[in-house]
Length: 317
Image 1 (cartoon, helix red, strand yellow):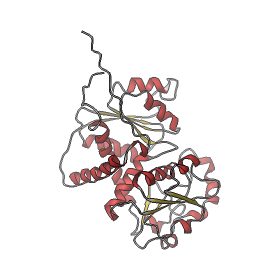
Image 2 (cartoon, one colour; image 1 turned 180 degrees about the vertical axis):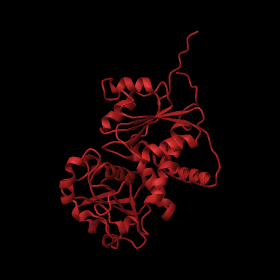
Image 3 (cartoon, one colour; image 1 turned 120 degrees about the vertical axis):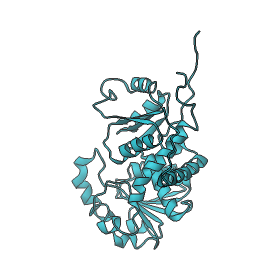
Image 4 (cartoon, helix red, strand yellow; image 1 turned 90 degrees about the horizontal axis):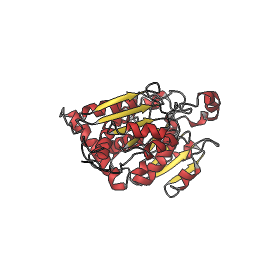
């Protein structure tokens, strides 16, 4: 007898816009529920028998630990695959790697450089693919950021957020978040370091681009920054330091925002460069809650992709 089962099309998470508004709200609420379960010491293990493959072309602390610990807490298994452990980008076509790996595991997380690597892999994967970071987007971080803001200040809808610094993958994901969660985003970056025009244009009704940090933070409810030179841009570090000097988030800059404004940074941070020590270590900073919430938000994401969209382990290949 011949089995002719066709796998259902997986739901991927390559950017925030792979979620609709209802899914996004439900995911954030669920992340906080899962956080409370863990704080109460309750064991919740719906992913027994599931395996997550974590493919790293870019190194990371928070991404690896949060996904690996999260999968273990949900009862599943996580496999860490460094560039030395895979053929991704080292001779075997990305498409072939996707076809093979997705027949052996239930979900794949990829942290890489070029966004096209991720999209090509997803096109040929029969299981969900998660963007752990690319040079274009960092959507998992935004889930944690939104969760953190709402735990401290309530719904982010209608709030004013200021992003200070490079128009990088974090900036791009904040632009998408403004569309998805319906808040106002003000972006302040040095000339020549603006976000990609097409990403910004798609969110024109939610975003304003400027070059003066003091203008961007006026009456803001949340101030966000990131490193000035991301991984892979080390050769530009000295040049960027000179150009970004006026874009350090200091106490004086925070004082121009709302009195109860919060500060976030995806970490690792360079104190004295993109943020002063007194801000990141001060009372308005929620960076440690933000870092912890990577764990809880990603557990909610795994639930959504594996349990809401797919049959359980042992599904027919």
